[in-house]
Image (cartoon, rainbow, N blue to C red; front, side):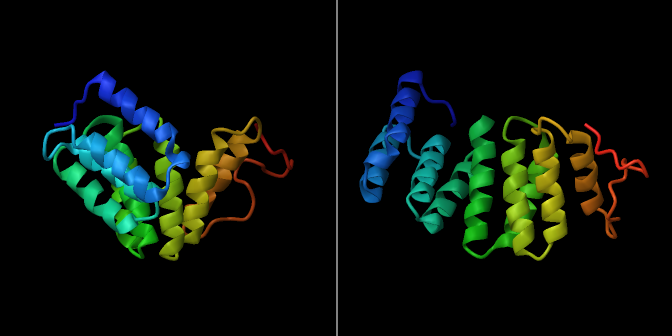
Length: 181
């Protein structure tokens, strides 16, 4: 079960917009009250509870809810958000290897507006497992798409960082010193 009506969605959005006006325990209680309106075992309820725990400094409980949401068939953008947030929480809890595994699979599974969030979180996890060059390469590659200039050079530098023995010169610069676009 992953569908909820628009009225419920709007109330959830309003509650999230007011997050900073609540004490952490009060916010979690408000989210619990809202999710209690959904049937038992509803994937969206577990996802929202995971988010509430994550956003209020309780990653251990967040992990439990994210896993439950994914196990009960969470779909759409919430599913991808749950994977990203689960992996981030696991990394923060000292399990970066599992974070890398989840995010690598997520990166390879498809593409949407959360691609850069997947890459950024994966880069953090890779750094935590001692794969800093790969982390930097992924992060720079993701950033390169958003730069007003130097996109090609930065993308090439990023790709070079992902090679086992990356050269120091930009592969497209040649001897002219051009930085590309």
